[in-house]
Length: 375
Image (cartoon, rainbow, N blue to C red; front, side, top):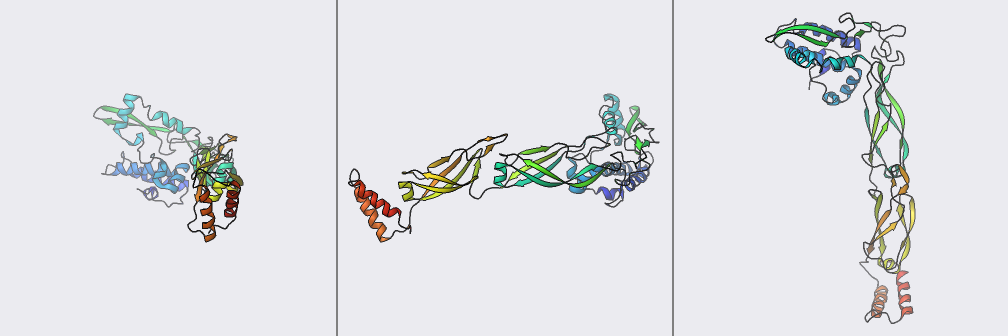
């Protein structure tokens, strides 16, 4: 990857004026109409490409942070004005629609870029929602010049090179005939205006990069991949244009004991074989805190018990909630005391025929077993 700063021969903290002077000097030196040496035209394209990025505050901020990958593929593509006779031929047959229209749009106010922010939240925060404070770096309209780039009390003037048109025309002769090539003015970059007295706060850019605190409202029921849009909190627009939007992408941490499936929550609970046989009331963890769960007598292994309305709230309608599904795991003791073995053998003898012979005696055996410490 080429280093745009090295191509222009400037340092990374160079201001807008330094960048512009470096570009003008190199553009005059390597312009293909002036310099006929081999490689001059390619060098001119590289210089133009570098200045196109570094001369734009938004593109420069993305380039400084992510390199060319942060430009979304826009960098490295030559402008129509840099393609020589092929651009002339294209504009002749297609009326210049691919180039002229886009350049005219660049002269007016433009909406700022949208920004993305990745936010990781806890499981319970996703369930019930929460307000979170975040800090984002973004471009804001300069409060000194209100986005004009000119020092207060002054203003931009028409570019002397293009007369305020923002474009320059150049006649080119090719084997197909003479064609007129239209390209952005190299002096004003297509804006049509120049700032002779730049704003001292932003260096004539009209925007400045700041780190801003924002409070984000996370609604109940969000999940990993949920995208929240915060209107007007993206980068400030160019030449007084509106700001873009901020998109917050959520990632939810996993819970050590609870698992989410849609609007339902799943978990497991361990009970003893006696609790499964006789039934019991135990306490289990839910997103609402400790909750009483009834274990019916005769509960089977892996049976699923349901706590209604203890699941995930429906996004946009938090009154509607899913359920908490609890799978029962029954623990069978690996060791028994002699007393426990004796009691179980006596209990088993009551079921050796068709059924228990003495209900009261059976209940007494169960109670004695249930009250013994599991070893």
